[in-house]
Length: 191
Image 1 (tube, rainbow, N blue to C red):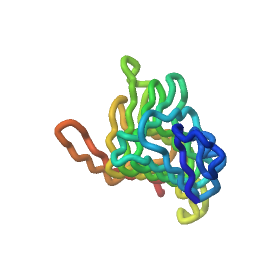
Image 2: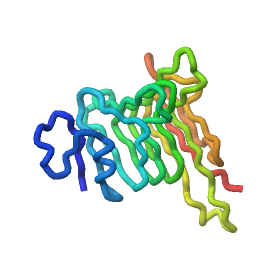
Image 3: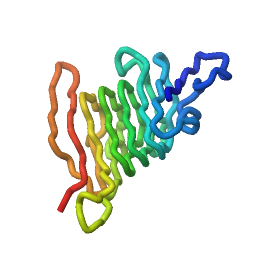
């Protein structure tokens, strides 16, 4: 099912339309897609996502749909399930844009911006604390991972911080005149 976040809609009795992202995430069912309207900024502070969802920006470019995390929040979005983000700009100040705790997170065609000056060490666009499931065979692990495709990452001393068992793999960076674009995967280290 598709849900929509649109602050400009006056009649919120329309099914599937919500004034903010937190309300849409709460109402969503596993597997739903949430379309976030372009134009302006949408507040996203410590929103926990505990079910498989897809969040998509409604603009032509990721810069047209912004999720803004207030200063002092741990993260804009916290993922505890398999999710996908596409075509969004996520901005955070003195925190992280995305906090990955478990599940498979895919970030495709997004912009992650950390406003960190002068406390650069407190900000990181992507933080993962996922830990592998200790099982007799690696095939039975939970499958925690982070995949980043065609995403612009700005600010912070590091693009990714992992404190779990995840490792950075298959990194590709493309330099344009004004930006760096990243493609990489963070996956469970199999021993």
